[in-house]
Amino acid sequence: MAPTACFCLCIGLLLWQSSRQLGAAAAASSSGSGSGGCEFAFDMLHPLDPIRKIRSEAGTVDYFDEANQQLLCAGAFFIPVVIDYRGLVLPRYANGGVLALAQQGTGIVGWTFPGCPEAYQKFRQGDVIALRPGVPHWFYNDGGNNEPLELIMFYDINTNSNQLQPQHKDFTFAGSNSNRSRNIFKGLTTKSISQSLEINQDLATRLQGPSNDTRGTIVRVPNGLRLRLAAQLNLNTTTATQLQDEEHETGQAQPGRQSKTLLPDNRYLNCLMKVIMNLEDPHSRRITRLTGDSFPILNSLGLSVERGTLKPNEIVSPYYTINAQTVVYVTGGSARLQVVDNRGVAVLNDALRQGQLLVIPQYYVVLIEAGQDAGFEYVAFKTNANPLISRIAGPGSVLRGLPVGVIAASYNFSTADAIKIKNSRGNDERAV
Ligand SMILES: *[C@@H]1O[C@H](CO)[C@@H](O)[C@H](O)[C@H]1NC(C)=O
Ligand SMILES: *[C@@H]1O[C@H](CO)[C@@H](O)[C@H](O)[C@H]1NC(C)=O
Ligand SMILES: *[C@@H]1O[C@H](CO)[C@@H](O)[C@H](O)[C@H]1NC(C)=O
Ligand SMILES: *[C@@H]1O[C@H](CO)[C@@H](O)[C@H](O)[C@H]1NC(C)=O
Image (cartoon, rainbow, N blue to C red):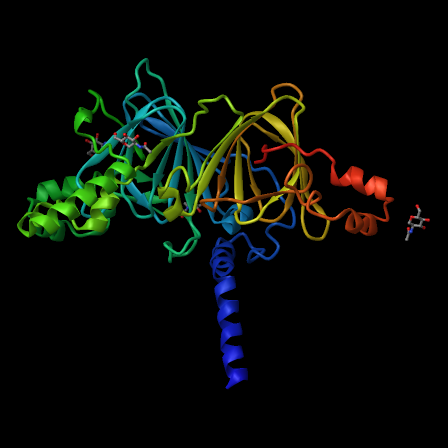
């Protein structure tokens, strides 16, 4: 009995442990990039530059190398998007959770959760928009003065909610993006569309779009979109919970009135879930974070985001992230980063410039030195709603947690030197 039980348990543990990596490995090996699997993906890291800019009618998208092992194995897909004034990113959904940071400009985002009414809301610079996997969404630049809207978009593609290959897939309801994504209606027969939607064939054909549609994924709305923003769904979770409680109470007191509930409870809450939260810093601290604690939808996405600024020459002493992969995008300035793996090998010792992207693997030790001219500005996306950072030195760090005797014995230090090391300064909270 006992050996069998142990065997099953062990196999179970093994399967459980490797499911995330297996998915990523499948993606990496099917990507055609050759070296196969994620086993060696983080043995050498490289800052990534965008390799392709695709222009649509009213905006551009920058693509990084999708087959890149580091991104695939971290389960991440990343694109900076620029939307011209009165540009509309056509409605689409993705096979993973999405975080979009408005780096510049203002706009409107709309989304539809199954069973929910029309929902859209205005957002401004510094807002983060969180969308669940499979939720159709669109963006529109309503800003004045021809100001472009810049979105930094992160897609999580390696989670339980994506049981397809861990590779980014966009399902679009209109338009096309060369061979990446095309209007899903194109794949259905015109006759069946017309019958199932009860519309005439001409309309069904137009729903499928012209075969020579060259507008891409971002189209111009010549006279602007007219949206009634007063009617926007603009409630936060606190309000939503209160509303739901009220419905429950009403229901108990007067059973007949329960039918007034708009939607089944869970769906109702989903409809009212807050999807926009600002990441600007009200206290001009130089690091701001959105985690599951401050922005509950992130708990269901298993993602978080951080934005930071380091002063010229500022140093972030060594640390590692316990429970998340990190994808850093440089929005300004530069820095030198050193990243060390378990073999004690520097898998990266390189400068990171504006516009570059870097994957920092979970557990790998990082040291950052901001550039001497413009400092270092970054956005970091993490694959955990509540990432945990472990610092090597400074308050609350590994070294502070080790007894002097252990330090002295580990490094053959005198007690005095061991105390010096134990109390060495590390900086407080700055970490990518
Ligand atoms: C799209 O086609 C190009 C060649 O035309 C190819 O390199 C690329 O991998 C294709 N992309 C996808 C997502 O199929
Ligand atoms: C697509 O083709 C139709 C008819 O051939 C033409 O009238 C239309 O202007 C074309 N559209 C674009 C965007 O090229
Ligand atoms: C939620 O909305 C209510 C009503 O608009 C407001 O009083 C409350 O402060 C908001 N809570 C949060 C966490 O934003
Ligand atoms: C440890 O340090 C002492 C004094 O500095 C030195 O004599 C000794 O050789 C060192 N031991 C090793 C193993 O290096």
